[in-house]
Image 1 (tube, rainbow, N blue to C red):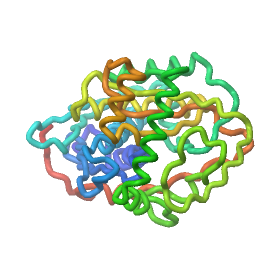
Image 2: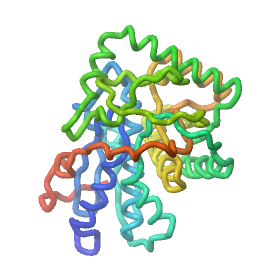
Image 3: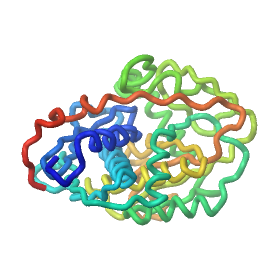
Length: 332
């Protein structure tokens, strides 16, 4: 980048944290381009999942999470990101252009950045400790600053949410194309993308929620106490690509905030990929207010289990449109 802006090493360090963001089936559907005075985020259509994510909503959410991770990383490194979302209406896959200005890191910036490499998608049973209301209020507040609403599903609304998750699992179990696509992106062992077998638990008789249909689950879930996980619905008032991008940013804020205070999280989107079930969640949990973009399990991690291994990611060089030092000037 130009003189007075971050050097290549700083940009690469921030991008290395950005690509730690969660993504649908760990497809990592983002491409980055470094301009002289800006960084650009694009959706990578080659990573699309036609059966799992037919309208690319999950892909955009994933890119929004990576965008927020990038902002958090730069803030901790002394740079504030000024984001221009969907800067070119003629190019809907050009999701964001990011400009950078000097910034003094705050303790919150540093804490959230430090949470990035510690965050995991924890699909195991959680512990019997209840989540303090103050922590739920904190993640709700962090999401609200990024334009999203977080609603806790309790009592009857939780029953409706669990029912939607079960119906989605049943329908997808009968969809051969869906099953093939999930199998293609899971059960991985040594590849830098897809869902690793070592991070997916085996089916248990006491599962409240249907287990993911990932191939070759190899994680032994050692938790034996009752699971007091909460179910949250993250929603936005709009449902266009910009709203979904913002939802991904808010989702990242929720996950990093939870990680920072010691909570485990797991993002669930399966019922939201079926229009009728998504409408059911909207009506039964959100009272027809807003559009559900992601479901989140949140709770204390099992105390008797080993720490989860880090899931692999592609190298920064693999998700750059051009190598460092070869970029041309690009207007936002």
